Length: 349
Image 1 (tube, rainbow, N blue to C red):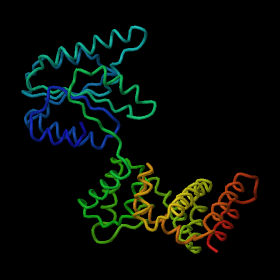
Image 2 (cartoon, one colour):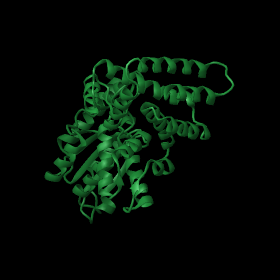
Image 3 (cartoon, one colour):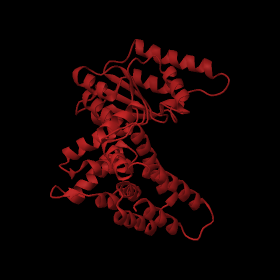
Image 4 (cartoon, one colour):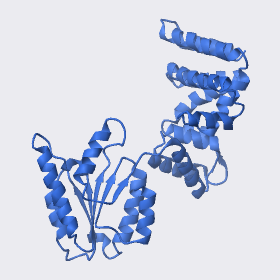
């Protein structure tokens, strides 16, 4: 089930005897943990009823024995077991040991201790890539637990919506472009988004709107915003703003080939939009979404501006100039600044 489904269920029904929490998304995991503690433990039980284990340090059989025991100090207990993947056996005898451990968990769940909730948390592995097979092994080990909650990383769209909701709750005045910049800067990490929005609330208060400069000043990794500013300015054909953004990048020691990579991506998207006959940002966003390329509305606006600023044959010529600029940055040359300034002048002429 999803974290949202878990939260809905826990509000309406008593907790199950055991849960398996899977996935690396710690912001939602924290929300589910708080909700479960409040539901499973009364105020009188929270001091002694919440027991933490780490399977990297304590054997699974020891934890199950503890779960079967009754406490003299708390009528209800919540046993939170982290590093659930650490119980996976290693070596040639691993398969037989896995089956034995799965049977032990199943045996406990056939007669769980009343008032005791077990949570096995595995936040080390992701659901995609090389981690997928490892996560499947964890699921197999705990197959006897029917209530599994998956904490998948936020998509860019979901992270953006979360940032909007948190900003609204905080009374923060912040525009959609600044929201997009914030989420981009933080890699759609929900926990960091929540933390930085609180920091921005304390910094800006409710009396003025948060600016891109505020984000660049306060948010780690937001210096990358200057790259996006350069890309957007060139895409609009704005020479003055382009040169200002380039100067900022140079003063901060930014890696210019990275800026060129972002710029090339923008123009390639604009070329696709032009050839597909897309006329506005809404059509561009819908088209690329159907192709499996997720872009936000403000990025679609930038692509639309680029198509408008580089009509007809100007767009393919701009892409050709980007190619030669990239080649020049890779060759032996006296100054990156000269290459990038020449590119800005040629693209904004």
